[in-house]
Image (cartoon, rainbow, N blue to C red):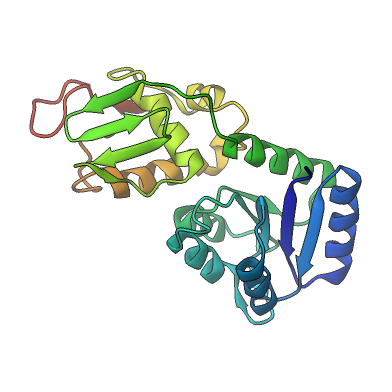
Length: 238
C-alpha cells in the first residue's frame, strides 16, 4: 500500500511539482493551499506524513504544528516543515513544537524524497524488545517505544525518543554530536544547525524536574552530552 502524504502549501506551482514527483516515486499525495483546508483534510482522512509550509495565507504553520502535537490522534504523525524564511529561530521553534524535520526553500526534490523516506522508516513499528532501561524514576521501554517518569508517559517525538535511547544506552559516557548523529542512522539531523541541541532541550523539558538544572541529560562543555548514571537525589556520577 502506498504511503499517504499531505502537503499544505499555498504555492500552487510548488505543490504541483512536489505532488507529481512524489507520485512518480510511489506516494499517494493530497494537497491543501491553506491552514483551513489542511485542517479539514487532517480531520477527515489519515496520512502517513505531513509536509507543512510555515507561511500560509490564513496563519502560521507553527500554530498547526502545535495543534497536531497536542492531539492524541496526530501526535505521532511524521511532520516535515518547509520554510523560505531562512531564520534559524523559526526552525528551532518548529522543532521545539514537535516537528520531526525541516527543509528550506528552494530545495531539491530528491532531498525532500530522502527526508520523507527517513521519517517514514523511523515511524515504522520496531521489532518487539523486552528490555526496559530503568534509572530511578525514569524508565525507557524499548519495545513500546515509550519513556515514563513516575509511571506517566513522557510526550516525546520519535526523534526525541531515539535520541534519549542513544544516550541512555551509554550512561556515564560522553557522546559528541557527531557520535550521536552516527547512532541516529536515518534521522536527518544536522550538527551545524544545532538541531541536536534543540531536541535535547525538549527532552529535558519532559524528563527533568528542573530543565535549567538537569540531572539526567548533562552537557559537557565543548564535548557533547552524557546520560547520568545516578539520578533522583543520588550523587551524580557522569
